[in-house]
Length: 127
Image (cartoon, rainbow, N blue to C red; front, side, top):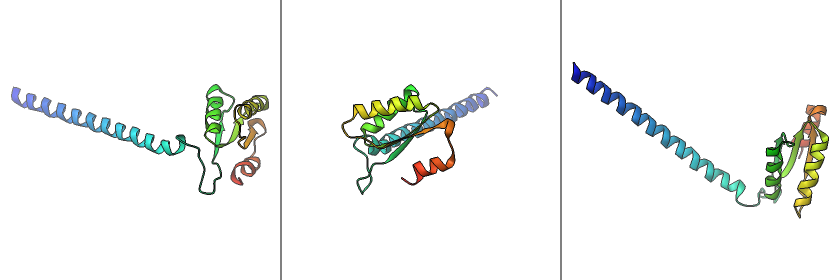
């Protein structure tokens, strides 16, 4: 009886150890895959084959993380669409991004209080 429980415990331990190692391997593979995929966007100036810059939409651009992300993407060559609730914070961000860079990216601002799909489609989809 004791040997049956002993082997059952070893089997369960081996199963959970194998499962944990498999999950760890998948997480590690996903991490390295995301690094290699992100490198094509983040290591150099970004543009398509025609030389036009990509456009990034930053929702919550007035927050600290949104401002930092806007500066980072503008330095990498992205055009920006900034979405925020207050026009004043968007104007300040737009001026600071243009002040920091020698080349001006195309920056479009959308105030969320006056947001409608026609404005969004005209701003984002047609560009």
